[in-house]
Image (cartoon, rainbow, N blue to C red; front, side, top):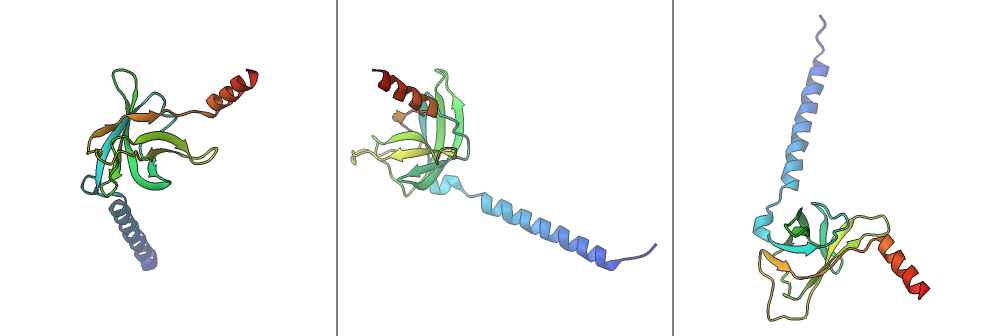
Length: 148
């Protein structure tokens, strides 16, 4: 049997780098959301395909991430999401589902309210919700308006 030290050393290097990159992958992707984010929720009739991991944006800037989407007892879609603690939102803020282009990813868009006296606290619910309108819904509205 022929011994080839080069292949053995190369195998150990590949295993070493694989473990190194795996550790760095977990380190980069595991941020502590509890310490620097707070949780909010909203009830939607139609979420339009919002899934865990979608962005939450304020004026086009990412301020959070969707962490849970589920149905409640009234068959509304409850979307839970985290927002950065430094972003303090008024209680009368509104939220809607938007597209990043025609075939792009979906995200939650927050529009801040004007009432600066009462602010949202962790685990509060945003009451002003604009439900998702698909392309089919928008086309049917245009057709309906054109026929009148």
